Image (cartoon, rainbow over the protein chains, first blue to last red):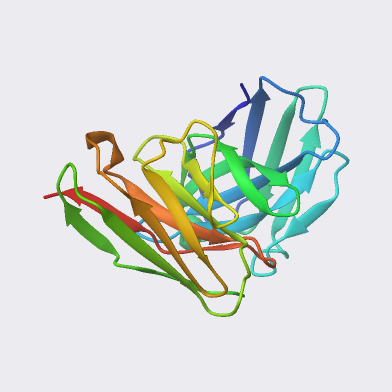
Length: 121
Length: 107
């Protein structure tokens, strides 16, 4: 059974870079056709799609965050990473990783439990 | 971006009730609509994909319908474990977007 687990610093200072990893177990991150996504939820707000990356490193970033986002995969560790630069308080959120199941229709399944990141000095 | 609007934003209901949550898209999205259940501290769970397809392992009391711009999630007989937040998500075009969520509470 595929499982995902996010990890990273819970506190990041303004203007610094947020770095998170997502460990994938129960399956290979480099399976053909595999896509992996990052999604976040600010406190009291709805979910926001950050972007996705596939097994070969091809990415799609939400245009609203594109200038600050970098995603990568490490097939040797079976994990994916998210970097968000120049963070502000508006980037405080619960960050999730998920598999983006890609077929004629796309959906996110499964998800990790999420990791809370607070941006504060 | 396609805006997804859910109604109601919160709902109080009792065990055994039939409840319906509505999701509206700002433009047509065909059947590119998914529903998730979200409980605090837990991973969001896929319930319905492509508007009306029940994800494996999800109880049959959950159902989805709709196409175009209006979609519904129905729970036919609420169980105690169903009290959670539900949100819709469109996968018609990037960036994928979510509804703001409907919090289902015990009456």
